Length: 331
Image 1 (tube, rainbow, N blue to C red):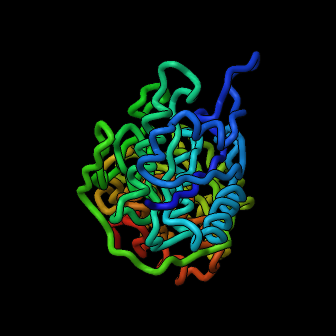
Image 2 (tube, rainbow, N blue to C red):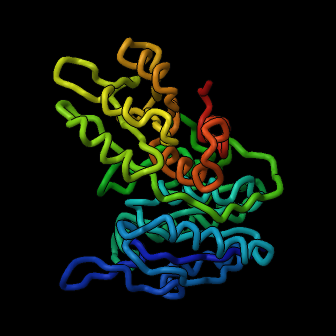
């Protein structure tokens, strides 16, 4: 039987009711007791790494998760990380860059309802995660939730309450688990893992809204090494009579800042060459374009890239290099 390490970090799956609302209080051992059937699937050992609401997740927590898995990598056949749902997609993306080409599965899971409730998705999600982590074909960083196995760089939380909380964006699911049976559709070859231990947290996100004050651009460029501009549709920067965004961007040209364009639309990605508002901006400012990447992967990837280099040429090369299926349509 496979030997799996369950790493608990908190989240709703570990939450109990308090007078101030749900709070993660259950330990990793207590969580595991709710799924005794996994003893027939694999051997599980547990570790309590954090016990926090996932709203409090920080890039330093990602480094802690990656460091823990690196330290324990040779001792286990796979890993299941219990995590809150609100930032799970960010964490799964970040671990995909910090631990690349893992031949062993690193599975994120959680729940919309605490595991100690009578009606909950926690037990099924946790059990399904051990089933997938025990598969001979399972590799890399994935999210297992509501019977779906989603590539870590392609997941997004799309519902706040329903059990079907996550979808795979611009990429098919790898497998499904139904009634304890695993149905695998896509698998990847086993490779030697590459561990990274540096992130640059100085990545800012601006969501474009009608009437956005151009001074926001300068404020962000002054504070951050990279800005991700979440634009409309296929991507563009307003240039009409009421906007000064181009003027503010121009002030930061040549000052070793990185500007990335992505889209607010979840599916199908960007293509800045379709409209004049996008085509001219991309050429003029040498912007990076996220294409079919998720926002979560875009943020995590920029933190990873800037942790390795500040060279514009190397940033460009790494951004468009496919890591764990994060970007398929690219320059």
